[in-house]
Image (tube, rainbow, N blue to C red; front, side):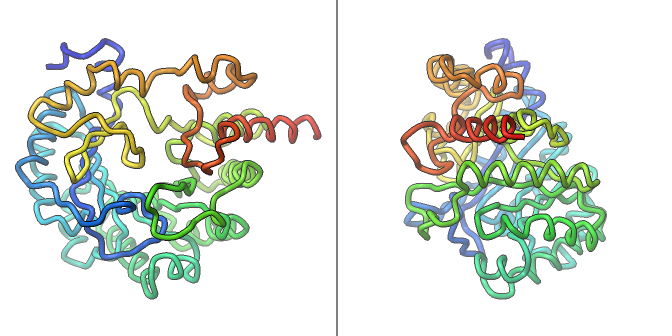
Length: 352
């Protein structure tokens, strides 16, 4: 089956993940959640379809399975999907969760698969900010779940969505997080985005170019300080850190990248969980068909038409940024977010 793919996509499959959004149901109600925005009802992927996707991915050469939601721990067949993944030869099952449903029993089950399963647990920031965004008491429940998972030996990354409210306190939050939970793998920062149908008007939380640069400076310097901080699927952060000569931030892969694919709970197929572009609906054989399509290749390969005249082209290409920033970075149509960020970063560097 792998031989049906273009050579560059086939090579990428072994390094990338095949993703399954198993449900959009969630026990939280975060106003910035893109997974539920614009949907008037919840969706659950049926067990047979999820298993078929996992089998198709394994046959193509995927060794990483990404399971997300909604809240995946609400999806009944999750344990069986993990067992199937192990039988199929997957080396990693990466599960996104808010952590609040990890009781002693769930921690024990996850711990029994700790050589296969890794978690990301969403912590929005300090207790006051987390509870304001995700609901009263949710911070304590998420931290307790994280502590149970860590005690069971499960690898845990903390995922934090960075908006304007968190930015001033980000260094203190990171320091306290690692002080209290030194066994977490890293703190992974996610730039807050806008999506159609989001529950709240997030205009006041979206980072400006200058604030994005401030986030990159903080992340890079926190790494220099010895704290493990990454930026998720955003190579613009890598380009900024190199432009400012503060290169202590690990390279960040692109959101849309060759080999990356996600099947949504409603059956739609996309390059990534947070993107709106779809490549039809899942049916047996659809993954290989999408990966081999011209539309998919156009979505993940370098966009020389959009980027070719940009003065930052060489810097971006050197740091894995093949396309302009997605529109939902700040919904400003005047020019790509990345161009405005790098213009500001260059002015910052020249002024030093």
